[in-house]
Image 1 (tube, protein in one colour):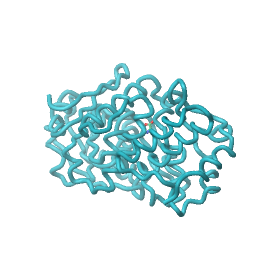
Image 2 (cartoon, rainbow, N blue to C red):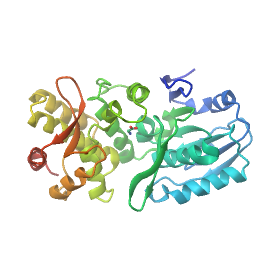
Image 3 (cartoon, rainbow, N blue to C red):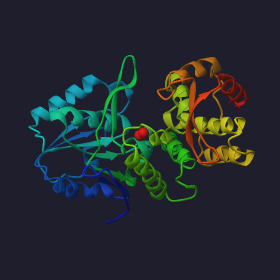
Amino acid sequence: MNGHEVRVELGDRSYSVYIGAGVRHHLPRVVAALGARRAVVVSARPAEWVPDPGVPHELVTARDGEPDKNLATVEELCRRFARAGLTRSDVVISCGGGTTTDTAGLAAALYHRGISVIHLPTSLLAQVDASTGGKTAVNLPEGKNLVGAYWQPRAVLCDTDYLETLPTRERVNGYGEIARCHFIGAGDLRNRPVAEQIAASVARKAAIVSADERDTGLRHLLNYGHTLGHALELTSGFAVRHGEGVAIGTVFAGRLAGHLGRIGRARVHEHLEVVRHYGLPWQLPDTADLDQLVKVMHQDKKALDGLAFVLDGPAGAELVRGVPDLAVAECLAAMPRG
Ligand code: GLY
């Protein structure tokens, strides 16, 4: 078998994530191993990007992006599954960026109270993070990812051939999640081939998800750099992309950890070095409104009591709750702008 294989160990729901050039061609073997007799392929990419799954199948065209990540799309997908005659022992195959794998994953979780799903993520961001770990969700007008389910895929095929077509900004965006892995135990992934970078990031995520599938503790680590990152995405109307926000948030997390005396200057600087190495943004946008950012960070799901950040420290990264507003405001004000 070509490429890397990472196992997500979850008892009888364990599965493999395959990473490398051409791994999409494992699809018929994976479908056969499930015993599925029919498939629906939900794809935001050209039909030929998904290999023949080896069973009778129908193609449903999807569109990547937040506007279609909603309950109306989930209903439409479930209706297409019904019209295609999918049963509980059949399979959904998703192909596209994280919004497509999320929406198809949620439809699979709900249809017949749960049907198998295989993800073929095509963006670096989705390969590194979104497609593995079983979080599926769609947006409501009231907020992002408010309706979802934990529904683990039966396999994930991260074909690095798909990445060849990504626009530069989208590829760099994916490195935001790889950069944050540097500080949550994946090691230094700089200057390694992209398949190794993805495999090491997925392996770290797999270990965390195996220990804390439902995000009650350890899984918070995956949100390194995300508290400010999410706030930057939201307050910019998503002009700042997810990985870009995480990158700036990672630099900020290093500076805040330094400010709180949790890490020394060299480690603070390492945050900047890693983010810059991947060509990611590291400065707060000129237009950022600091009061607004603090307000949005108070609405973070982890912020039960005051502000919450995943911060590096003597024992490694951990969730720190009750971070004083003043410390956050001082660090934000001291961030370079650009
Ligand atoms: N993307 C964070 C998680 O899967 O928990």
